[in-house]
Image 1 (spheres, protein in one colour):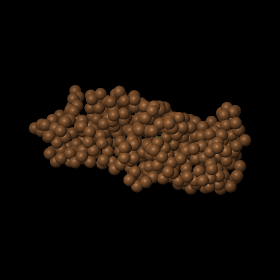
Image 2 (image 1 turned 45 degrees about the horizontal axis):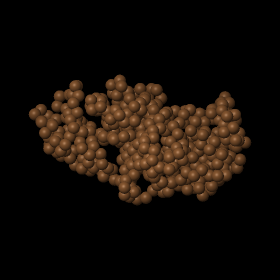
Image 3 (image 1 turned 60 degrees about the vertical axis):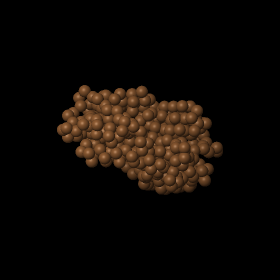
Image 4 (image 1 turned 30 degrees about the vertical axis):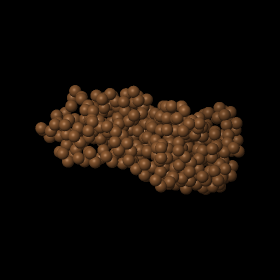
Length: 414
Ligand code: HSE
């Protein structure tokens, strides 16, 4: 029998406990050991809970119990989760977490500590919820050089965009609906401004290329500025707008990484990933494109990934799993302004402006998008590929000529 502790009895933590209790026999067969929940750490009381006697408010009870070999951290946030996880690893306990903030901020350090202590630090649930992605990337695709990883990594924003695209719901109404359905938090900033997605793409980038990428330095745009006009122009062009986290390895060894809304053609494998679903495309040099699709959030999908990691820890007490990346380096991430892409622009202008001529004079070749319901004195067009720096300079020029840029969105070739 292996004793485990669960730190945090929120949505995911209660799901983890439920799976361990209800799947007791099948898990024991797979882990070749019975899994026993010895403690659950939470500051709240849970009177009447069938696991009531397991609850403790004292982290040291878990830390000091040498029988606890695996600790599940599902508290979320950086503090005190980081401190607790560090101490558990230092004491020789394996740790499983779903905490993307922790892995994105401290992954390299905690992986190194796990290696030094010959224990495991596993985090399958930190990206894509129940979608297997960390293990496939580190094991099944290990024979590939990863050319690019790009994905819809946030279910809440994908739900909002889907409502805007399918039902012509405004951003504000779609957000309110997402909140009423429990997808979006009361404070939805982390989802809608891309902070959740950037943590996830940083974890995938660190895994794919072996060096830690810190979210603080990464260009991050959310979807709060996307309007129904943009959705309509995207559709007239033959595409959809999706919030994408993307990382690409460059020939000089640096990486081009960002989170931003992207206008994708309907033919893209990610264009049809709708509602709260996530889709992650890994482009390998040998495999070509491999796409992972499924529920990227939610109690039971996420708990399922956590418990699978617990089983993996138990099966690898003696032969540690090899999951590792080194710390990041200065200059490793391409400055966003050097990133190259084509851009969609929606602009408004005053009476008498020949927008076609003005835009062509400044941007050179452009592709005007015609839609039946265009507003008066409004146009949208797509530029050729150029660096973001050059685009910004030309966009400034366009604005100086009296044209107002209402939206600018990256074009995606995924
Ligand atoms: N809030 C996230 C999402 C789930 O909407 O995808 C957890 O990462």
